[in-house]
Amino acid sequence: MPNPIPEDSVGIVTPKSQHFSKPLELECGKTLSEYDIAYETYGELNANGSNAILICHALSGDQHAAGYHSSEDRKAGWWESSIGPGKPIDTHRFYVVSLNNLGGCKGSTGPNTKIPGTDKYWGPDFPIVTVKDWVNSQHRLMQELDITHWCAVIGGSLGGMQVLQWSIDFPDLIKHALVIAAAPKLSAQNIAFNEVARQAIQADPDFHNGHYLENNSIPRRGLMLARMLGHITYLSDDSMRDKFGRELREGKLSFGFDVDFQVESYLRHQGKSFVDRFDANSYLLMTKTLDYFDPASECKHDLSVAVSPSTAKFMVISFTSDWRFAPERSREIVKALLDAGKQVSYVEVKADQGHDAFLIPIPHYMNVFHGYMNNVYEDIL
Amino acid sequence: MRADLAIIAEWIKTGTSILDLGCGDGTLLKHLRDNQQVNGIGLEINEQDIESCINEKLNIIQSDLNEGLQAYFSDCCFDYVIMSQTLQATKNPEILIEEMLRVGQQGIVTFPNMAHWRGRLQLALGGFMPVTKSLPNHWYNTPNIHLCTVRDFEALCRERGIRILERTVVDYTHSRSTLLMRFFPNLFGEVAIYRICRADQINNPTEN
Figure 1 (cartoon, rainbow over the protein chains, first blue to last red):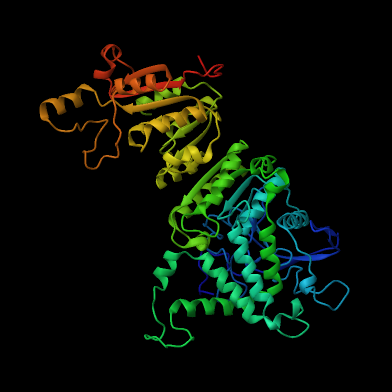
Figure 2 (figure 1 turned 30 degrees about the vertical axis):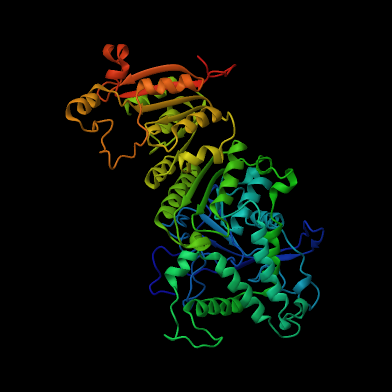
């Protein structure tokens, strides 16, 4: 943690957890008899309870969106760029709730937690949860926290999909929906990448059909490969060229199969560090959740019909060099919202950082984000 | 507010829906929302203008006009589609006008009149491409790639089966047409303002 703590950081935050004993029925037909949700909050709920914001995390995100867990913590939460005093999601103004989704691996019930009443890990037997299930579980947490409505639900990537689902499933409980770097459903190419990632994990001899925890092993190579592949899709060709070019690590070619280029070294590092912080079964599950997301499928594949229940105002943001969820995919969302007669603004931010741009404080993006959040705040006054 | 915008605002009925193409900082949209309960949305490409629109709580789509209409809007989803001082800077005005009248019941177009006497004088006597208040750029740095005159525009409308519902011309010092402008619009009008619809359009709810 930087010392002193920057003024625009929420500083030290305490992880919280909520136990739920009321069973949660899932879309797959199974039921979670009881479960826990790990979450964090930043800022204070105001007297009339009108300033609550829900943050939805992406594939490899978690509840730790901002601040530091201790003074030894090296890295801040994943959306430190946008959450904190004076930042777009201003914690002096808003009460921010960020949670770890079910099936995750950071404290919420998921594959790396134990099946209630047993000493066995869920592992591969944890039911496949969908974005709709997540939204339902987030709604349960909302009730526990005595929050009557969200003045905004905000998320990027898979998080943006949850925002869209919120606006459809609980239209009366959400005033503003910020859908960032998202898509209305995955393309065949997106699913293909996810499948290769899953194959990499499942083909690892240490995977043990998902029962690796009982076998005291971790499918390191598989999860690392999956992350390396994923990471390539989060960057753009240009940003990789700018960052690494064809720079050599040792200054000369090795004429072997070890690391020659900086980009190889970087990817290996990304993959390795991911293994230490993420669970392979969770990764499998979350990629499936992504693949399954398609709210229009229940409405004869007409997204404008799917979003018709929404009453929220929408802010949709995409990034020009994002090829994982390209601007075209955001435009589909915008078109559907316009066809359904919704209030919507759309900004396509010039950025060369690829999909990851949504985490980076690019000036135009931040100005738009800030401006929009000012409006959200004025609406609650 | 700019003279042409003030006239557009007068033409637009209370409580209608509009799309403003190239809406700039949203002056017109804001005026119409605050004074005439108009439900509007803007299309704009300039980052600063977009930020201004968002700060004013206006609905805005960041998009190039040439593709935006096709990409986002279904047939007849607005009462009016407005394009003020932008037509002459678009790649394909002909298609854009058609698109305006596909998406809206009516179109409102304003453009600098190339045949204004000041420009004519500069070209006829000086032999230079006109540089005037309404056309401040030189030929080599102008965004205005499709300039036209009042007569040109009306000829295109005739050819394309577009009905002119209303026309007025103004200059930068008067927000009203003077007598000269009314009798000789192509000579004395600096800015031309048209309200148009498709000639085959029937049951036009916004028709006066």
